[in-house]
Image 1: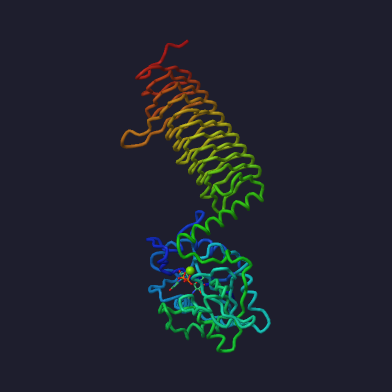
Image 2: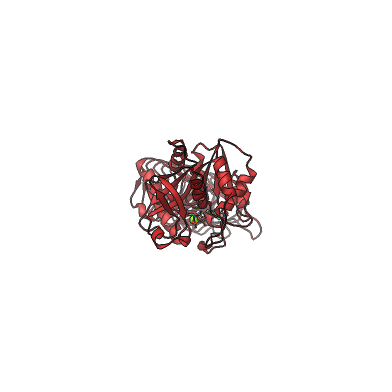
Length: 445
Ligand code: UD1
Ligand code: MG
């Protein structure tokens, strides 16, 4: 059986934040989310996350088993309390990773586990990375293709500090050897902590082999400790997300200014212009145009639809729709096919049928608009009476004149018309034409 223990209880003091470190986000997901996501594909039988009181609930809410480390006495201590709640499993393997390495990929986990099967059966395989300036990372002290020990930067002498191979913080252990080594840890170091990294020297003392697995790219295994490092990791993650969509047939004019999140779906031949943010499980069809300067969050956009310089949140647009420039859709707005929404139009919880239009300067809240109806410039549905919200139902082929105010709740029948500046305080029958303030019917033609 292969188990994974993810360490996420650290205080994260270097973030200088009220929010626990591993819950800080890059590209819309927490650091911990990325680690768990990569583990999800690594053939792990059981995963346990070591948390603290502040993050425990949110981690458990994502369906993962947790154990709370009340006092953060170091990475070795965190592993010890995790092992204490896991029943013994002789011959099993334990993969340990830190929750602060969001750029990690599944392959590194499977490689380090596979290294346990190498010749001489190492008791521990661990991921290392060569990098020019390892700064605060633990240094790998080698003897040939064995790791002799890991020395934390704070405890290192100048020769050790000059070593350019660092400890990534990803380990695969034989479970029995791990239990034994963790039991022997001491905290006589610069930080007064129980370091998991000291298990290396212990296992070597017991004549076990400790195998290094060098990561292909040190950037994949960087542990994030402060916000400057987080910003760099975000750049890398975003570049990867953009590259993936470009490979899948999406044109991104300038990936440096397009901000994506994981788990988006974007169809082929869609073009994304600069300064555009797309997040929260948005879906975009084929041949659409998004941006420049657009923000989509939980948006579902069809094929051949344009969203220019506009905001679409929690809303849906069908095929061949034009939105913007400078429109704002929110609160479960749904646009059917061929709808046109122009500049300075805000739609909240509004449903517009095929071919309907609101081209300029309008607010429609809690409104339905039937097929091919036209909402004139400056139209407002007054949906709020100071206490409750009310709906406006507008039928098919209706023409709402410029600057009309419709005081909800109101129903306007098919083929009706309001004159410019009408203040509609009564329902309008199908085919009826109303003008004035308050709006009154014109004689039938
Ligand atoms: C650690 C390693 C270092 C390595 C670096 C890679 C140790 C002693 N050092 O240093 O060799 O180069 O990671 O990024 O392991 N945590 C707990 N409980 C604790 C302490 C920490 O759960 O009591 C968790 C943290 O939330 C974090 C992880 O363990 O996710 C690593 O802790 P951190 O303080 O970031 O260690 P580093 O100083 O980065
Ligand atoms: Mg760290």
